[in-house]
Length: 189
Image (cartoon, rainbow, N blue to C red; front, side):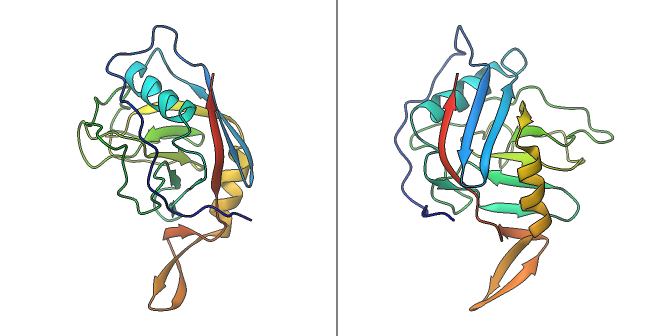
């Protein structure tokens, strides 16, 4: 169960340089269980600094994962407290893309954590958790690997997604997760 609703994001000052001592892990305590991510600070220092700053400022707390894709690509998208899919930290400018994969084969394997964006240098707070091997364009910064909780995300993927058609909920290959996923709190260390 979840009590979270879309809300105005907390205001967090955007870091302008990589942290001297980058966080090593990020834990999302969710209503479905913990998801622990090993952070790739050496390969994506600006991204890891930005995500850790948001997590430790409470930005992700009480937010919903708003998108699940179960056809073609296999991702659970989170990181937008408004739950609209268009939210980003207030006053932030997009930051650089880092650690982009090659444009071939399964370039986002299961367990990958990468930034969601709307084009080059538009990274903000939204990210996706890859729960099954996926091939995408090489456009999304890879900043972590799920070390605990991948099974939870896979179960959410197996339950599926829905979209609304008027007042009727319909199964969909890309939509809201049927199993609500709330990030109760996030902590980077």
